[in-house]
Image (cartoon, rainbow, N blue to C red; front, side, top):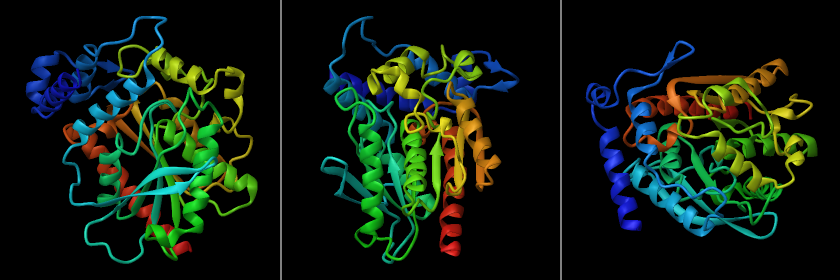
Amino acid sequence: MRLSLRLATLAARAALSLPDRVIRAIVGAPVQVEGAQLSPTAQLLIALERFVPRSAPGVVPDMAAVRRDYDIVSSVMHAGVASEVQVRDTSVTGARGPLAARVYSPPGASGPLPVLVFFHGGGFVVGSATSHDGICRFLSLHGGVRVVSVEYSLAPEHPYPAAVDDTYAAFLHVVANVERFGGEGLAVGVGGDSAGGALAAVVAQRCVDDAVTKPAFNLMLYPAVDGMGEHPARQLFGRGFFIETDTIDWYRSCYSPELERLFEPYASPLRAPDFHGLPPTCVVTAAFDPLRDEGAEYAERLRAASVPVTHLHCDGLVHGFASFISCDRHARRAMRNVATELRRLAAASIMSG
């Protein structure tokens, strides 16, 4: 079973690497919504994703197997990305004990560099340092920072607010021990993708609320910042655009069985009453993502609170596009822009510090 999964993922990776004109011949006419056109690679990805086996309705999945398969697919997809980056495994202190972590350094880096504490996506249910290895390698190499990728307690075994408590504790641990992570005397920022982007936002907000050292910057990739929102994009792209409403709802119910708790600002950071004092932030959204609108609204809330913010809107792409940088030229181009903004944020944090 695992071998067939690896082979299927390798085949998908090869298909996504084909020239656009060949992919267009395979997938047919372009998909357009609200005047935006889906990239050929994203259209092929959606077509391939329809062949992924799914659990029957009402069947409780084997969470260990789901997480293992997620890591396998991600590892195959990311294989070879920024292989020259230096990597070492370590641990940080979470809310209930040690958490696995992984440190990424650009090749040849010997002195201190700004540090990005990164939280992986996966709906608060799946994901690990392994599943996001390629993303962290890419950001370290092209963003010129050391990345500390932190694992945290996953739902449903550890529902909200376990992940919030872990990531907050982990950030404070890195700040207090920054020399261990190669950032002595320099800034420490946060970031993450999807669920991890939401956790990065909450860490920043909680630091402000608690009047402790806040992140120097925040990088949020297609963040899931409103667990109970009914934004237009949820309707537009809730079916047939890679991540679907049923999947989002399942993640949500795992993360907080008491759904009313998702109205709390530390579960849905878009609902925070006050955005003043948050760190300079880059919010990245994808045009064909059900979470597009909440990310854009989060950027607007920051702007209204006079927080320096850059909103990078990526045309033609779907949720999770950073996971396909090894084989999707459109995703790779977008992530180059993200890494450029990360480098700018990190440099600005040194200047201001």
